[in-house]
Image (tube, rainbow, N blue to C red; front, top):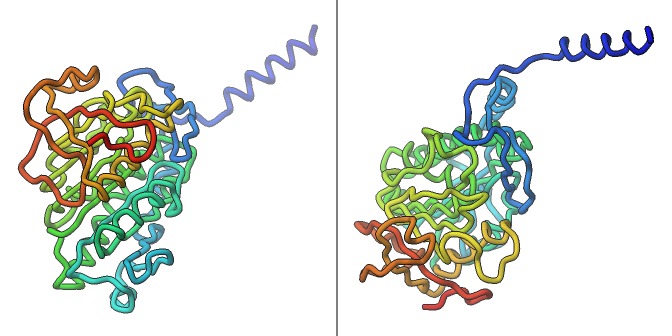
Length: 336
């Protein structure tokens, strides 16, 4: 009896001695614990109440020294040329052409420059146009299993990417941010907006591909329509990893934003956003029907006369609204 009591008291003493990490903010107005999906399609039960421990981990990430910028062009479509913040020589000795369109690609949580989203979109851009495609590796910030820290790092990285672009433009007078296209997936979809709003001049085109939902509903840094001259969002997994409500000038809800034909998992739904976008660069397909609101888009009850092409290389400046469309279950996904 005495041994048992002593063991219990010892256990309580150990628990009491554990360091406490105060709650700093609630990342979500809903439940504290939700499932979030990383870029490999794995679901993780995450704590959406940000703590001091999360902040401590996040501040160790420095995008100015840890982000890596990989340049690809038609002259080097498979082997990158790293561009270094502050090193004009790294730019001058590369294939970067300031007169060409510059595309910035941003991966999501738990991934790297080698993410599938980059592997799909990079060749699609280069096949369409001889562009400067800069693939950002922010894995030093996204690679943590600590989701609240990854959310904070998404913002830090976006601000860092903007500093890189601002430096690049100032170092090369011929470079024009009016020719910039920023495209990000998942957490990178939210980050694309952070990049745009921190540039000296607004980029011409931002594409947010199924931007992350968990931790962003009440987040002041979430994607906004004013982050670029033209902003477009493609929603494909609104019931899990993606963001439910409209965020851009134009928001597309293929198949109602969830349950993509040919998919049996939420991870597949999530990934469809960049597959659809990559195909749109090549074919210009995917005709969306305008909806009165996003609730109508979710159920496919859209009867307004206006139509608009989803994705594509050229920004649809001046357009706005919410659009619904259907896709096929396998490539080519566009039904016209």
